Amino acid sequence: MKQTRRTMCAAAILVVSLVAAVNLALPALTNALHPTQSQLIWIVDAYVLTFACLLIPAGAAGDRLGAKGTMLTGLAIFATGSLAATLTQHTTPLIAARALSGAGAAMIMPASLSITVAAHPPEQRARAIGIWSAATGAAGIIGNIGGGLIIQYLPWQALFAIPALIALLLAATIAHLIPRQPRRQATIDPIGTLLLILGCLALVYAIIEGPEAGWTSTPVLSAFATATTVLTGFVLHQLRTPHPLLDPRLFTRPQLRAGTLGVSVLFFGLFALFFVNARFLQETHGFSPVITGIAILPLVIPMIALSGRPTPPTPAIIGGLTAVITGLAWLAWATTQPYPLYAVGLALMGAGMGLALPALSTKIITGLPQERAGLGSGLNSAARELGSAVGVAIMGTTLATSGLRAGFLIVALCVAAGAAPVIHALSKASSGSSGVGL
Image 1: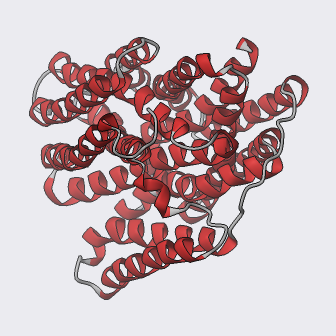
Image 2 (image 1 turned 135 degrees about the horizontal axis):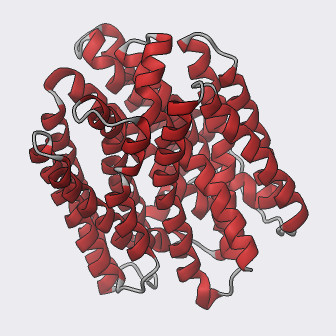
């Protein structure tokens, strides 16, 4: 059981740490490939967005085809995309390779949580989810330090070659170690999957391209209109089809609604920070890539320390969201202060993540029947990655138009706005109005 959990945590760390590592590498990639500002955002978001859009169908595929097979396929695709990235000499092929890696990551992430949950008896699952959540938090420091070492001492291509090698080693370990999971009846809805992907792509495209093309330009307005139309079509299709990919009526369950939105809000704030943190520390404070990686420790240490502690879920979630909002507001002030004061904001955000994330993830997993564990895992991971992609896009566009301090303040306001319905849903779940047990 422990060996399975450690292996699954390692797989989750691999796919999450690459996001942090690439954020750290943005200055080096800028010098090597000379991307535009929007291309720079797409280097990050091509991976994160593909990751996010495919997580729910990948989770359903894991239920139907078996989590182990889905995991092995995902590792192979991830390794292929990473190797392709090492061969690129221009920005556009790099973005395409990152998107392919993101497709593999989408298969890995929900399978890792689904296998972890299945390997533990019911009374140990909440703790197992907490450990898995802590591992994904630890991925930030692993990606930062590992990426810093690579960028400082090796060519940037090694940033993708090393994860490819790790993915192949993990695949060999999982093939030998992990037993096959039972297959379950689950829907793989190609029309719903296509609508979800197109809608999310159109939305993030509009947010990323708005500052350069103009918010009232025809491409940006068309993208927003397309996102609205397609995502509305997705919801209507899911309500009408007899076998929906993700039935919107599930979100009448307050605990599932709170968990999904809460995870999105947390990662919206976290990855908005990740997008600017490395460049800020290197360009403003003059830190080397390695020191920049180490400088994220004040965020990660409290995140890991608090993730494994049993805490009443509702106070943990409310306290965690409050700490993240406070941390972002503090960082806005600390952009002109010495690093130790900046680190206080990082620590507040890390403490908030450590308190709230395990409780929110548990609400998602327990908000669905056991036979839909793969879908629950996919939904949990999709909430994380879609929140991350939008956070990067919002921070990137605000940074380009209004500067870093305004970026942190706007992200803090967005997290506060998202926290309000999360807290409302928690109060409804606590009152038992949904009829769904906590």
